[in-house]
Image (cartoon, rainbow, N blue to C red; front, side, top):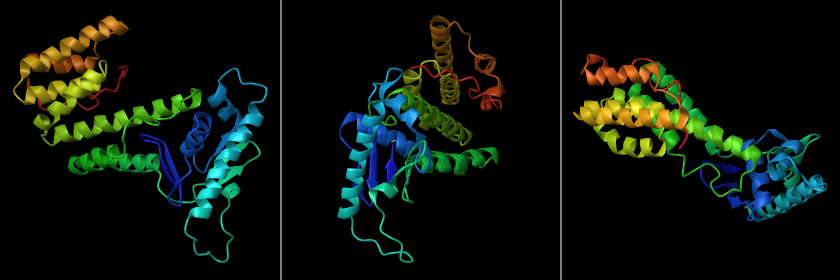
Length: 281
């Protein structure tokens, strides 16, 4: 089974789509796909579909959605080219793929690709390369990880409470990987190449301190000291107005270093790339 959630939802069994078009079954499949090979409790699925006020028929209706998904899975299994038996094992059925468990349901992926798990593996390799000081490898691995994203996670799924929480988690993971990839590129002296990207990012994430600090540093290194200081003033005004906060101590030190053209601006201090991140848009 191939699972994609880092953008539009796409789930394929043996190359054939099993993604329903109806909103509620899509929600069920999305939550099961995010937790592939793990049990998703019935209570979580009901909370996702109806929130705090489920109808009396919630369990029965959920079972109907599961049956609809199994029909799609069954059709895909029948349409797919026959697979050679392994040690005489029986051919998988829809109930083997979408399994009923005592407390919930489990989507048995049976191998295949999973973009979230691939992202996490590549990002983890990139973080380890950063820790080891191998910035070239870190930038490469993190760029590959971020390339798996084709848009907002589950962009075409109507999200309830459970999916909203998962989408926020995935977005935070993406921002962490993006932060570290930009940091690796700064370590490699790619400040001019980063300017266009950071211009877009600081406008999208108006209170994200790490991105603003990286933008300030890239501008300063590109000979645009005045603009770097303007970025700080705009961020400070936004933080004070919207959140009642002053910029972090790390960002204030960076601003003072740029103001005095101090050598400290040759690199951000360890941990200065936003351990306190505010990511409202």
